[in-house]
Length: 179
Image 1 (tube, helix red, strand yellow):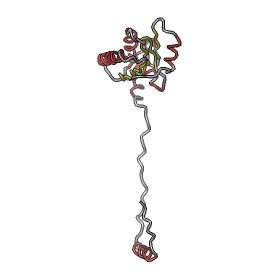
Image 2 (cartoon, helix red, strand yellow):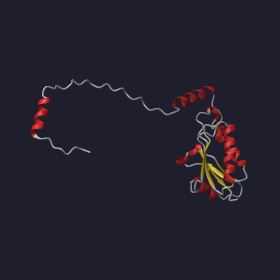
Image 3 (cartoon, rainbow, N blue to C red):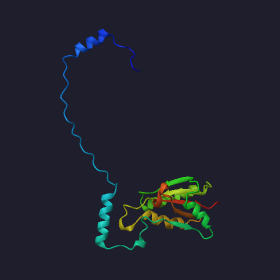
Image 4 (cartoon, rainbow, N blue to C red):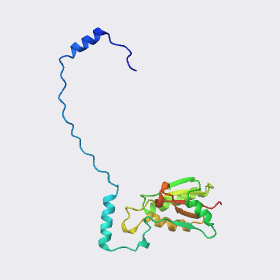
């Protein structure tokens, strides 16, 4: 809280006398160290990977799901349901983050998660698998595995890549049957 005391003329005079002999210190120019330029987190690794792929020949683009969306609906599921799922119209009831896990660990965690979801009656979840930037020419490994694992489940009626705001091609919306 500021002091509301106004100095008297005598106090001001005494202060001026006390600081009369003081000389300001010479100012030295401040040498600022330039900040490093921002870099994308995996820019060097991605550039090295592109260079390596160009030297080894171009892999079949159909083998990689990098940057491609996944869409699946069991036979009998209306296109309108898949369209609503792709647009994010279903409320996300739960979320599972798998990116960074090894395949065996991801499968175990996914199975436990789906088992938990089975009894809750929840309809839609989001599963984050990552975009596979560190997977090299193999492409996004967890994304490929999820594509297979989820198609095998009886209780999963549809899934698709999430909207960009929810993770884009690095995440899936998964829709369960109402049973």
